[in-house]
Length: 66
Image 1 (spheres, rainbow, N blue to C red):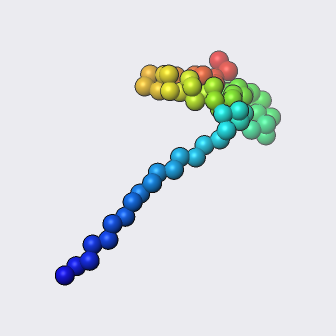
Image 2: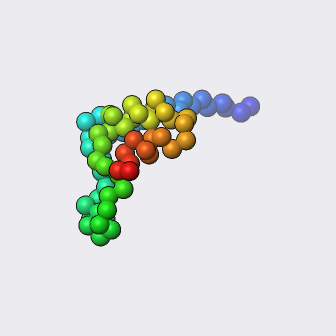
Image 3: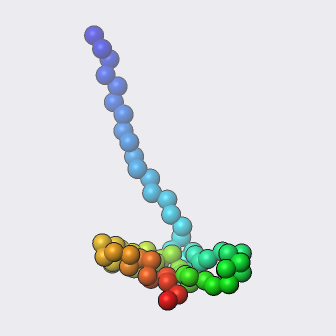
């Protein structure tokens, strides 16, 4: 007779706070002389991502400097 053991998997999603700011590293901007992306607030980026997530690279265009 074989004992059967049950197990439960619980996914946990971690992320930064919505007010967290993201942007290019100053060292890289200083080295390259140009920032390709602007500083964004994570909550705004996430909102934009879910509104346009299936539309190509729209989530990157949200932060683009061009």
